[in-house]
Image (cartoon, rainbow, N blue to C red):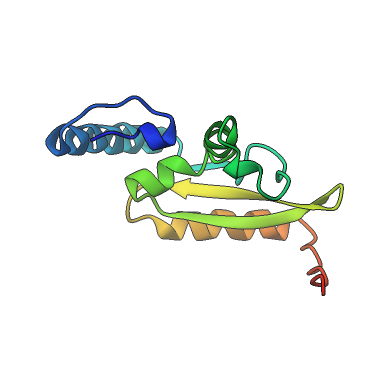
Length: 128
């Protein structure tokens, strides 16, 4: 399998890719035995200008760096919840909560705690 379109130089058979994914799931589960929930940024940087992700020279790196914390949940099928946390300099901010496989309850409990500690942002008026 080639993932060059994502900027990754990875050559692996489907069997090797599945084995690697299974190993990563086990490692995350071991981590969750010590830390039942992980909270991190939804995006690791502020939103970029429209079309910046399409730039042939920097777009792939921009998306990869911005979604760094989102990738494990999507790749490994971990339960997750995103929680809005407010607005900074006119831009929305948020966190994402992960837990071990089949522990959606922990994600929802942690999200409730985050929400209780913050004034929920007021929805913005859409641009017309």
